[in-house]
Image 1 (cartoon, rainbow, N blue to C red):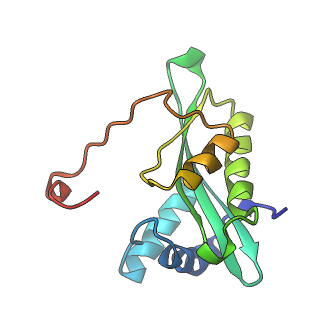
Image 2 (cartoon, rainbow, N blue to C red):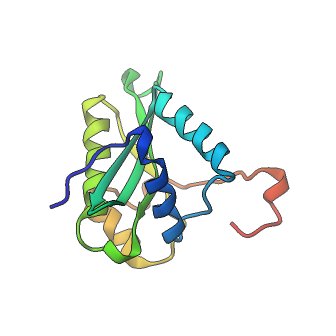
Amino acid sequence: MPVARPARAEDLPGLLALYAATEVSAAAQPPERAARIWRETLAHPGAAVFVTDHDDRIAASCMLVTAPNLLRGGRSHAFLENVATHPELQGRGYGTAVVEAALAHAWAADCHHVLMQSGRADPRVHAFYVARGFEAGRRVAYVARHPEQQSQPA
């Protein structure tokens, strides 16, 4: 099974290539802006990005954001975001490795729970998350979008 590792500063080009190959969302542009955001991400105390490698490229990635919490007995909570696996490498364990690394990180940080949302309609995507221990239907998600983007498709 592939092994996940924490992302490093030099992984930015590989991450941008991964995002370009997936249907997740458009990556930050121009490259200088992406580099600034990546430096901020790596320096942020509550952010952790995990990747898996295949040959000379990043096969999958995800981000875990943890936050302190006064509720839940003071246990932190976490949010799983930006899960992406290269389309040519799906079904080979790369995505599983990064998500399981993120969950292990959250549990080691004594998080009460990990929340994640998916806007994908593909039932295989939902089956993937259920197989990782996520429970569908436990919460209702609401999304507030920036006023300038409300007329655009989600």
